[in-house]
Length: 383
Ligand code: SF4
Ligand code: SF4
Image (cartoon, rainbow, N blue to C red):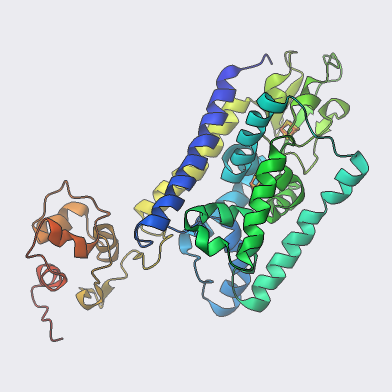
């Protein structure tokens, strides 16, 4: 396989786009109505893992966790079963942030930090301890205990810095600053030693049929694969990369100068890094898209699920609030956008993300009360 620049471009574009979306969303969440933009917790699959025990035993989800968060968790698990830690290597925004900073650091310092192998190996167990500790604490506190110490959560609250300057959230902020500084000279420090989600996906990836193989006969032992590996795996010494530290970034495969030497194998079928990335992307975002269309992907406070504004086969308009969006109504009332907009007599160009109370800016007479009456002509405010 010759180095394929298109793969680098594709992978970097995806990672940076996801990171950009997360940062933009965090900004909008902090500066606009949190009703319109989800919190970082709702978008982090680890929050759903912390909430799993609570869900199983109380039938409810922890605060700030939604059905969409569970869908994200399900997707990361499916991807880990099929394609090992491809979530870490292809989709994770915090992994992307570390890689980005490391690239900047490489340009500035041209030096890499080397942690002695013995210490490095021991330190890698730390993330499993953090996994066990944070899940245990989530159970006994019935809350997202880890979020105050989580540098990714700190990143998501960076535009509400005052919330991070108080104890214990300041620990998450300090960790975030530490990770940013260390990432300048050391690859993926958080992924290697701290991330409980990475630890969880490592455990699942053991059952995946996918692996990277190295052909001893064609390998010229140039060790390029070792040099480019962000997780410091000695690829050139292995026949098969089954190391659970591998984040399946496939940078080694892409950089190997010898044809047919490093390959991704899925049940003895060869698959190129680009194809794998596209498949992972389609599974992840395709499922989210379909779940959203079906109205089961909720990630925001008060977001209305499919059909939840219908009672005894009738529109339950008394539940409608000015803080809901037009999209909430189409979801909750099982209506198409056209049906709803026709009933409300509003233009189809009005965004579905408009809050009902904001509709009055363009349609002054359209009060929440009138909206209810237009949807259900028999509705009477005194009900
Ligand atoms: S180890 Fe954690 S931070 Fe790193 S890529 Fe995986 S999920 Fe993201
Ligand atoms: S072994 Fe290859 S695919 Fe795995 S982390 Fe290292 S470079 Fe990425």
